[in-house]
Amino acid sequence: MPEDIRNDAALVEEYLHFLAVERGASLNTLEAYSRDLGQFLDYVRGSGVASPLAVSPEHVTAFLAELRGQGLSSASVNRKLAAIRGFYKYLLREARVEENPLARVETARAWIRLPGALSREEMETLLGQPAEATPAGIRDRAMLELLYATGLRVSELATLTLNRVNRQMGFLVTVGKGRKERIVPVGQSALGWLGRYIEQARPVFLKKRTSNALFLNRSGERFTRQGLWKLIKKYARMAGLERKVHPHTFRHSFATHLLEGGADLRSVQVMLGHADISTTQIYTHVTRERLKEVHKRFHPRG
Image 1: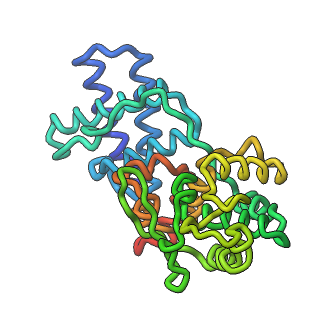
Image 2 (image 1 turned 120 degrees about the vertical axis):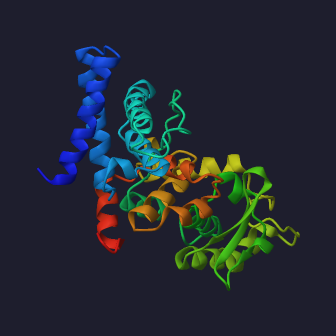
């Protein structure tokens, strides 16, 4: 057994002994805590953390995201959190760590299940559904491409205006929650479809009217959030993905695919407009194996 794993196991055994002798913990409790701590330490070790003494709040939050991706109930997660929290309280009491990395981690309430991300192949299938030869099809393809390229909320896309898109520089400005503005890059594929829509299809919907709204319906009015969601459901049904597609599917897929490709969490946080990076960590469900692969590829000592 490698030295670091042996040291980790010794710390856990020390804590379990404390629970048994000082707290009178039952055998079932000790076995459950041993399993839960073992799972957590395997996870952080796989994420490149050399010792449980070096665990940060971000590592704990990423572990929660992993559990969430596995579909565990809030009750199961809270049991694991209790084991980990108690472990670090003990280490803090014994002056092995300077602070408890779980001090600000709340217990899991009844989690709202986030919609899963589509695979890249499923996303390609969905994006290819609009009829490209019609003005409506060009508009719809541009909207779908932009959702996937930027991670915008459906409501943010619906409220976009022409003057907030800079096609030459390749970015847009959106107003998110709390009326906060953020700049989001736009990829070449989405820019291409957006250009086709603005130059070829939008004038058809505008019908000699004036409007600063970017996406217009057949009446020449701003495309609503409800209308956009109906369109997404229609194309998901055509692609055979209706059960997999929800209002946040494009946003969730955007974040997941970026992280799977090696993007750093901070950049994804900024693009999604999350005030707290822990929201980004919980929002995504990149597999532990993929995280290990990314760490190995990008870390100088991977």
